[in-house]
Amino acid sequence: MPLFSNRGRELPEAILPIQEAKEAKIAMQQRIADSLSTKDNKLKNSDVLLYPTGMSDISHIHDIISLYTTATKRTVAIFGFLYVDTFKVLSKIHGYECKLYDATQSDLETLEEDLASGLQLWALFTEFPGNPLLGSVDLERIERIYDEYDFLFVVDDTVGTSVNVDVISHCDVVCTGLTKMFSGRCNVMGGSVALKPNGGARWDIKKRLKDRYTNTNFPLDTIVMEKNSADFEERVIKASQNAQHIADILRKHSSVGQVYYPKGSPTQQLHEKYKRPGKGYGYLLSIRFKAPAAAIAFHDALDVAKGPSLGTNFTLGCAYTLFAYYDELEWAEEYGVVKHLVRISVGIENERFLDEVIKTALDAAERATLQVVIPNDVSSCVTLSLAYVRLIRDDPNDKHKFLAGSSLDISTRLELSIYVFPRGLNRSGGVTGYNPVAHNWKSIFGSTTTSYLTEY
Image 1 (tube, rainbow, N blue to C red):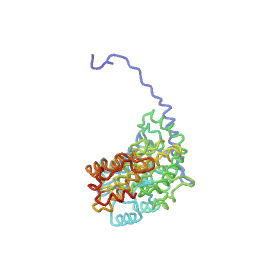
Image 2: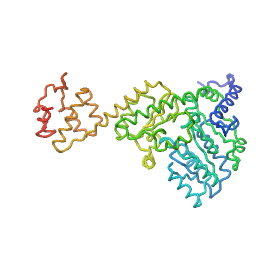
Image 3: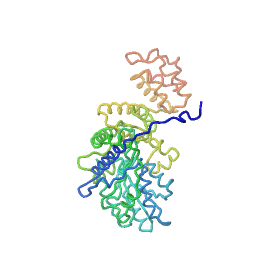
Image 4: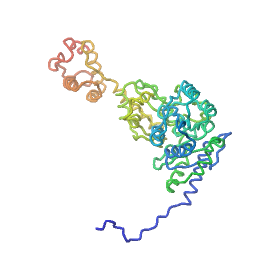
């Protein structure tokens, strides 16, 4: 058989719908411009540039601003804990020194102090709100700072969306990952850079970006993205309503330590300043559980698609920190991104379905918190045994699940599995065939345990 089986054959010419793609590109640019526009900032479709991916946005902004950088001005400020790839593209690929700040008011003061002390910035990147902790920054204050110290202010609104928040009024450039909620279907990639009509004048960024711009989007991708995004606003509204509903449920549960969501967060007041009237708080939330075992159980029982993306029409969950920072767990935790953080990108499913999914996962988290350790004193041993009796009384088949989710060493698990009611319970809730001697309670719990169990 020849190495190239098609050698010598005439292959059909690939005909791409170029004209349709051009029309789709213009329609998409206008859709983004309209969504970003405000009363005082009316964007045209020519103010929006489209790229093959969201990270391509960041790289092309770098290409322009790097024309102005000098040996003493190659520092980028990263304000807030941003999406992992933004930091990596700027620091690892383009070689910039990235100075990280948390997103608090005190960090803004630190930024001003650093600038006053001679720090030379060429740009400040932030997200609104942040990912994965969903904190909101004071855009107006940063706007005043960059006006004074002459650096470019770039905001990523992928999580917040132009439907819910207005960020273009306070920065030079808005980057958006179109792969996410703008598309929603998880079947095409893209990104956009939107330029404030009167922003970045001192950098001449608009002219330089447009002069160097080449449309490298594959025609079929452009067509698919335009069709996917036709109902962008409606989907954002629905997903935001669902996410707020889920956040309310999670905050009431005993196993949950903290829910990261703009509404109800310490920075909600800041978020309200930039939220569009009547719109929602976004589709993304993260959960910090009181115990790692609860986080693991919740994640594993959460019956939705699992993956590291976000903004899909279907609900998507992931163990975010393990996905994004597996080799940098301690570093991430310094910024509040704990190892067992669970992130949920909420979709547009009906509320009843989501209620059932979340309830099932929370039930699993609650069971996982029943972690036990065999103590030395008799009274504590009795408490342990009674708790176990109550558990298997409610669900006789749950014994091994309980043991598997506990913190007991393997030998103790084996002893409990053998000695704790191996025949189960009778219909009235009593112990079937209970015999303290045969079950050798004394060897496990001590000599006085039998009377306590008999009374129970």
